Length: 419
Image (cartoon, rainbow, N blue to C red; front, side, top):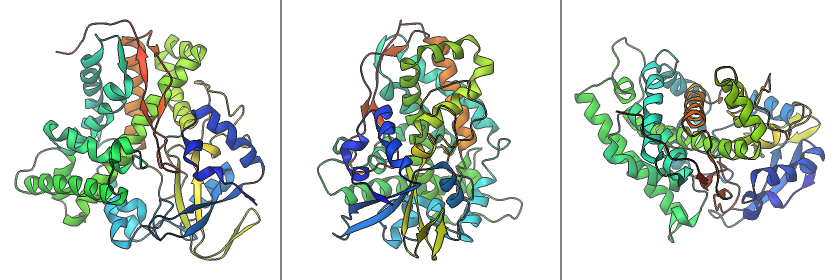
């Protein structure tokens, strides 16, 4: 198995998406696994881990949670202290039976039927957001759309007042900023993360306490009230779930919107195919954006026993990092994997995680948000195009989400349509 030093090099992850994915080709072709190392800031020691670059092996490991667990250390690459695991990851950092219990409780409110009011509101929120900038003609799309739109959906869903939007935005930028100093500031990165987490925790605890006394029809009320005798989240489990939702549910959609606009600008023929038949093409186009962009860079698993996958021996305690973007371009699984093709079908990508117990619970909502965002962009601002290159997240190492923090665009100004 090869050892690759680039994977923890910040410069590797600051490259344009296409360039970075080109560099994955020889790594993936050398074998399904590669070895990497990093300096653990928490311990001061150099640690090694294995990365999974091919589709079949990533899917195989995702389906084997008993042998490759999520709750031992973290799904991030460095081990987090035990007290921080639930705080920052909720049930993505858990294994069964704890994982199954929490996911089942939350999952009751994440079915398409239960989410119907939220899904219906997505169109109105997107219209509201685009109305705010559609007359400008020249904007940073991250600031005016990619960033506020999915976060407003989540805040409204949870019953977070609009007056607290900036609090949630600032905290989530810190947690998923990958150490970017623009978001973290000059202080200690771990302290900045902790303070951001506490900010969200305090806010959510206040909302939950209010909903216990004054229930409404938002998701928080559903999570703290139970009329049918089913198990509920404990009070100390509400805030970590909100942190997971606000961070993962916001930033993945945010990143997919930004990368999608970039991809359409650089592939005008594909953009035209989509615009010519919005109804027929939106579903497959959204799936292709998620495949090509793969907003979630990785999740980590930890071997719980000695186990062999595709001839490679893992030992108990080995860290295994699933690289979704590399797997989503594996030519063994996808024809013309480097091409952006909005008509691609089937498209069994792992952009929402591999199959198994940790597949993205919010995939249905994310698909809805992306469909709405691009339908409105393509109809309301049909000549929108890049006015400069995307500015990537200035991460300190391998970022959990391969974010774009600025995306300059221009378009012909148009009138708002909201009331």
